[in-house]
Length: 452
Image 1 (cartoon, rainbow, N blue to C red):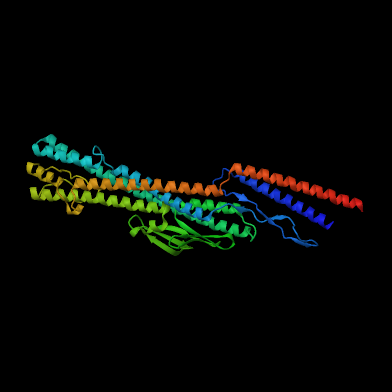
Image 2: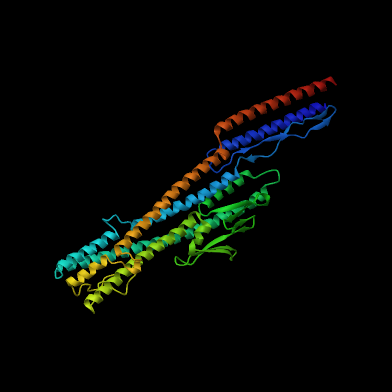
């Protein structure tokens, strides 16, 4: 009877094993459309043998643990590529928007307006006393000032928009770090050395995917199923179940810094000077800092252009007119956002003045690095275009890499309905065989009882 009871126990365990395997397969099928779900399996291992008269007798099989089909190396590479893709995608978006303010096709934009301005002076040089020619110069001058003012204003609005978005990004990052810490707590409470909280681990990986869009990080396994998160330079963002950093923006566009804090205490600080912030954070957060630096640089270049234009006209008026009643541009306003004409920009008009002004068109200016006013605008437009083109090409490359790595990750962790159907049939047959074993063993036990 002992052997029959052992056979009955083996059959019972086989039934229970098959039930769990069928339930696990059903769980996989239910999550087939969830891209953040990792396929689970319930493998069995041989049960410890029993020493009998004939030697060690097998005692069947038992479930080991429900495990996830994951590749940590692929996941790490995917998260890194996702961060790079987000960096260049955000950079392309911001710079493309700024490009619309500074792009110039020769027919519209700053360069075309400047050419119209020079052409008006050329017309005035041919008829210095002409009222319509003088009015045209003044009108083209006002148009040029307006175009410079509008471009500077749009760049300023772009700066403010970047800073607002950067603040929103940091708020989101802080929320994700807290969520990872909380999931660490839940996983540590739920797991044992034998059983893993697989669904909670999936939620944590989903949160890590979201975090990779904002910053680039590395991970390290902690105790009790926890996961520690660090920036590339080793600055801790999440440690075990206790610590989640808070990222805070300080300063402004002129002196931006991002602090990593723990209950108000500064753990690390990254300054925008020298591209430290974007190198440390990367992701879309680093891209916003990079874009902010570029937009600021373009704004500075526009300010240098405006100052060179105002200064150049002042020097010409002083040289030709001696002590003019009024200058063309108001010398008190040399920034691009402020440049304007005086109330009487052409109080004196002569051929000599018009020719002297036209010489400024081809004059190399030290304040512009030896470039003319037109060359400076052309170089600015080219720099903007090259920055956008570089960000766009890098985004295509990194996004393609991220998609490939995600496809490889899905080939390991994703649910294939075809495979699950095969597994379901296999487990169903195992269940039927185990049930048959229990039935036959029970009949044998009943026969033995009847013989007594």
